[in-house]
Amino acid sequence: MRLVVVGASSGLGRCLGVGLTKRGAHTALLARRHANLVEAAKEAGPGTLAITCDVTDEASCTAAIDEAAAGLGGIDALIYATGVGPLVKLADAGPDLWRHAFDTNVTGAALITKAALPYLEASAGGAAYLSSVSASLTAPWPGLGVYAVSKAALDKLVEAWRVEHPTVGFTRVTVGDCAGGDGDSMTQFANGWDPELAGAVYPIWESRGYLSGTLLEADELVRVVHAALDGHHLTGIPSLVVTPRPKAGA
Image 1 (tube, one colour):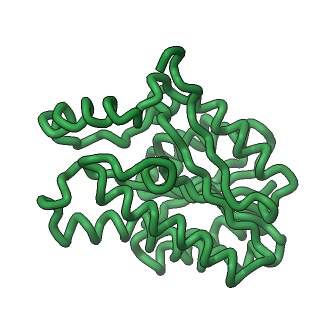
Image 2: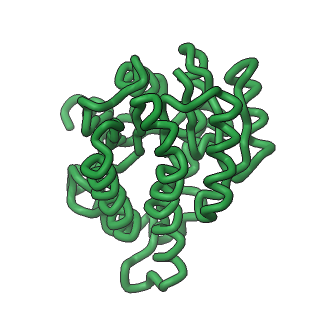
Image 3: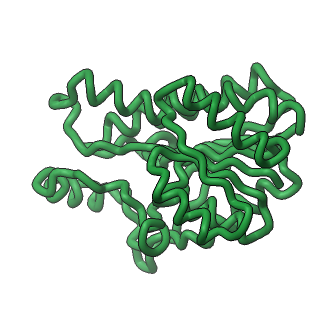
């Protein structure tokens, strides 16, 4: 499987890039932080490509995807794991924050997909996009409204691509609480959050049952995505949900 993982410098993107490569994929890792990508490529194994890509810039997306396709000899599968989750009350969210969230979580996914589409159509391949339980399985979480709205838009984007290009498999992968792996593979989702606001909203999340009380193992996410990508197509799998088993008694 010739695989491109976008957002592979840290967190779940890195877990997926490294984990799927170790399961046999020939992989190109894409993200902004090249030094982190180089380290991830070393961890994944020989032949793994590290390619700089800014998903908010169309020219960068096109150049990175073309470089990946040239290095891999084509593209069978794409994983879009890039995402930002600002913690902010909606009443305090300004236009710059909204733009940043949508540029990264939605428009970036569209630009990357546009660039990869000719290669995916040629291979009858598939693309998977990491989404959130707050966009589809629960009500929006207080403090994460901007994130939930952008991920809901991403979900609809996946559906729209599927309608217009039915020969490519487009899949939403809804991920629950997951800490990621060790080091740079650990999730950085909460980096930069205001501790005071986090302390105020966490009890609300807990009281509403949004938190499972356990964390999904990153290896389990890799296993499920690998099974879905096996044979390099996702045509028959429009949606996957990968969440931890609730804590006993919860």
